[in-house]
Image 1 (cartoon, each protein chain N blue to C red):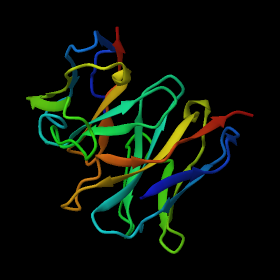
Image 2: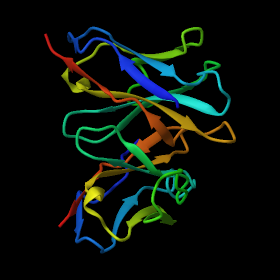
Image 3: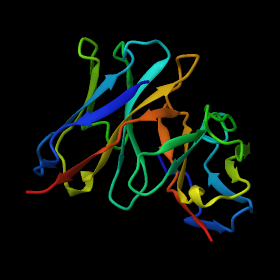
Length: 124
Length: 110
């Protein structure tokens, strides 16, 4: 049974870089037709897609965050990571990693397996 | 990239049916059969309930159904149960190769 687990600092200072890792267990991150993504949810607010990637390295980002976001994969560790630079209080949120599947291997919009989420607070 | 539009809240009594709408544009909902719906009880991660407009993942009760007309998608929950009380979010693939979510709808079971 595939599981995802986010890890990383719960507190980040303004202007610094937020770094999170998602560890995939019970399956391979290199499986075809699967994409791996990050979604966040500010306290009391809705969901926001951050970006998604394929294990080969293709990445797709939310245009509103694109200048600050990097998503990368480490297939040897079965992990993928999120880096968000120049953070402000507006980046305070629960960050989720999730898997999306599409038989054609083209789409990455339907997230069928989610991690439990990790709260990241941006504060000095 | 604008969020999809959902009603902030809906409610219904046990056994009744409720429908949640999700309005987008011709660049997302209207152009792709790539609408998903998620259920999120308080303090938990979202759960995929519907994908590709009307498909249910394994394990999701058939009380949940999805449809689309033009730029608006809908989630219908029939035979409402107390356990259905949660926030519901729609999402769609877009022509910019993005994913956009709706603002969320709080379902209250009276």
